[in-house]
Image (cartoon, rainbow, N blue to C red; front, side, top):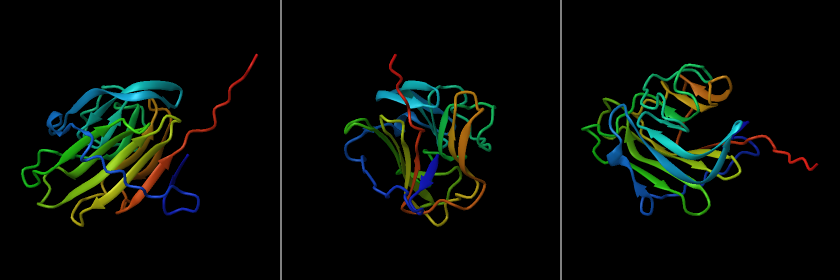
Amino acid sequence: FWIDSDESGGPTFDWQDISGTGSKLVGQLADDNYAGPFEIGFHFPFYDSVYSQIYIGSNGIIGFGSAGMASRFKTSIPTTSVPNNILAWLWDDLNPLDSDNPGAGVFFDTSGGQCVIQFQSYPEYGASAGDVITAQVILKPNGTIVYQYLYIAPGFDTENCAVGIENHDGTDGLEVVYLSTYLKDSLAIEFVPPGRWLALE
């Protein structure tokens, strides 16, 4: 299930800045491409599988496989069309090499018992100067996923995006928002897997 920081019992917004400590990946990303795989640092349970690597797409998605990871064509979640097996933190047509916003950064850190991917001053395609977003995705060993949105410029278009998670074949997923106004500054969204039972025989 998912819950956000505006709801009772939701996560507390807790920005974990890795811009000074994480590996810099922005040089590996361009308009409509992806980079990876990168080691998560632990075995991460996601739906009915466990993963140790991720791919980072330039258009607001992170995936556990490479198929379709360059896609800028967001869809409602879930859908069986590629890409599947994704974390869509802001799936839209983005461009880290936008000429009007040259300060974009992508950082990756697996210290502290979790995996953090941070998108710093990240612009959409054709953005005006200053129209950027700063957000991060956090993966925890127990399967919990957190999206955090520190800052969204007033001119950044968050209405035309998809946010959610989707399983390996697109038959299951959680859609937080699709083509609607929702994202804002200092918002945290937490995805929590169901309890996992261990049977002893």
